[in-house]
Amino acid sequence: MSLTIEPLQPDSAGQAQSQTQLQAHGLPLTVPAELDERGNPFEVWVVQRSFALLAPVCRLGLGAALLFLCVADPAYHLLELWSPAVPLRYLVAWHAAIALLFTACLLAARRVQTHRARLRTLQAFFYTAALLFVWFGVISWLATGDLSIVAIAQLLLATVFTLPGTFRRWIYGIQVLATGVMLAWLDSSGKFLGQMHFANLLVIASVAYVIDGHMLKNARALFSQQCQIERERQRADAVLYNALPLDIAEELKTHQRVKAQSYPTMTILFADIVGFTAFAATRAPDEVLSILNELFSRMDALIDTQEVEKIKTIGDAYMAVSKDNPAALARLALCMQKVVAQYNLEQGYQFSLRIGMHCGPTIAGVIGQKRFLYDVWSDAVNLASRMESTGVPGHIQTSETIFAQLHPRFKFEERGLVDIKGKGLLRTYYLLGQQAAQPA
Picture 1: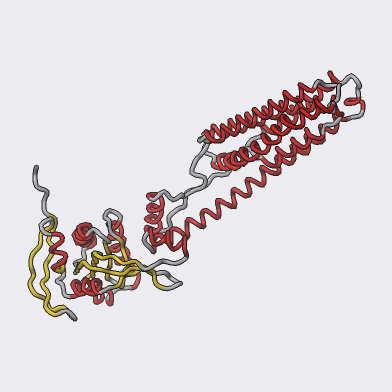
Picture 2 (picture 1 turned 90 degrees about the vertical axis):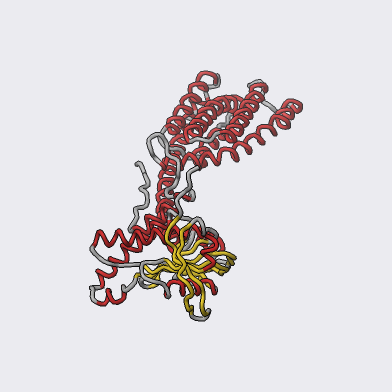
């Protein structure tokens, strides 16, 4: 059974945009991110899990081996507790060999970075461990007539580690066969074969084989479940990133709340489709929605090309801000006019935008606990809205503050004094375009 993960398919242009934002900021779209040479993510995942357990197991094993080398083996020698049937140096050599294996695996665990290297390291560990436990089985049986440590080691490896494929299951059989051949040759008493101890080894190997297969099956089920959870998380993230700016969405996910932030020089833009309310009154709802969706989707695409953020749409009005780059918002306003002009040419309409811009201190944050809305408040926002409402169709009206920040990089035309509600007479300007770069 081979399990692969399909990338999350966008249900709409907004969801596709959100996925682009997730990828652009290094957020995962599938698990795991690395594939093996056959493109199987499950194999990568299961090898990563087993490799993560290798170092803890080796640390425990190394500690036990060193304890035997430094304490138990000298005690066997001094107290003459070891069986004379097998020289003690064979046991000491085995403890030294297993300690070297654990040390080598610990060093490899720090250096190995790729899937292929992890898999090769695990395979080498299992092959070497199998050979060493054949050696230990021979020593243990000839000295004590007991093979319980070998059985425990087989079952421990089967339950702790999981690897794709069947190569480990072959190891169980080969290990039993090699142990049986060696003991049949070296056991002069004949008890190993005469009392059916070889059959016991076969039973243990069969149990390890079954456990190994069961653990692999469970790993596939767990991987499939985690993939499903990841897909659902991606869908939830797509909705969240589509509704909120990236940094705000991350803060909301991490802390379940968003602190209000103040911006001393935020630039605010309001754009309104002139006469669209009257136009919509004579059209079918589906047609009105389709037109607005097409226009605003094209404007949303412009957002990704500039250092600006969309705040919201209100009916046929569009609001965007730039926290510290008024020039980017000015370029957005100019591009929005071109988008509407291009749409008019394609569809035969005569829509025009009335755009207003202002710059000043603001407060931004998320409102409510349901249907989160990221919004911006301040007198500067009100003045930007007044710039739009008192503007002229087809023009971008800006405050004197915007003019002071962008001139002479952008071309302006002074409109003169305009009566702004709550402010009185204010000098305003029309943004005409960006100045051509001067040749060096």
